[in-house]
Image 1: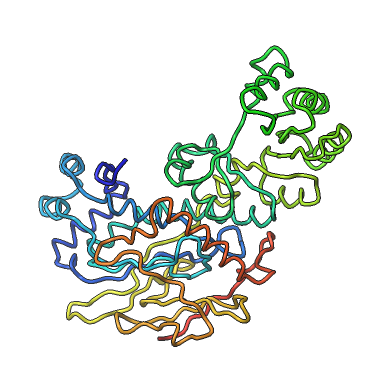
Image 2 (image 1 turned 90 degrees about the vertical axis):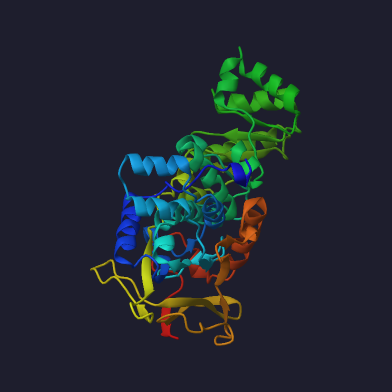
Length: 444
């Protein structure tokens, strides 16, 4: 689907975004320049770090954020907004700027993951779209990164499409790939985002045939001996014996999808070796999460397939990010820092520049410089011991195509691998604890 053909994303929003615009147009505040910030107050599940994911998808949807005839008709027929607002929305184009963390970057409590600048009307309406994409994708990436750490050098494949909505499944495969998975079973994710795809056969294939041997022979005939045979439809030990008898000792791999995996994997490895199939790989699946992967670290397993846990965030299905107004112009045109002060839901006002301080290549803190308005922001020249975390994603309403498409995904994956190497060793732990890096605020 070309960009010109992409369906409008304008109604992927909450009603109150438009009713606020309606009221702001009436009282004259709609054109006030504002700074909105997307951030997380805390890390979900008391994890050590978060992973930014979904940025490229957001930029793609921003291009399609247009109110066409169908969208305007719906708003008019359902009396969501008045005539003045309908005229405004008919010509809506985001003309502001968005700066933020690169996709694949690590984030911590308070990290200004996105900074959206523009008029109140054009920036506030992006809240729900931005949050729905980044909260979902970052939650998946958070889980995927932990699983990648637990898996070590062993390949990981995402296999969770049947445990998610059909479009969420594609987004989840994308986020998991950015955070360290090597492949997906989802073909649309492969087509849309350039992710390697994998998969051979399910239990239904074995059950279709009159015997397990017939199923294996047919699969070998179709795909060659480098295929992976699913050996646990019936008896695992008999399945291994049948697989090697049919394919020979050069069989590419076997997959185990049930049982006490550490014990079963050891038994299967021993049996394969006894039969001379010392090069046959063992892949395990079956409700794996990061803790199960860590428990398998000493087992003779060659690869993993993870489904439900990764696409649902492994116990933390949302990243918990929020989108808040942090600075605005007043009636006289001056800049004012603003912040919510509600108990446990406060925010820190002011426009922010973010840096990751480093000591001999290891990250030591998340440094956030805060200013009240649009004055000159701090740069790495002010913090030579740090690297800047924010980049320009949208300028004058135009998204940077370098962060979009399959190429953007590849860059995000590469960036994530690099920045994860900066974490202190304690940041790689799977147990619940404080963030790996403290967030330090300074006045600009």
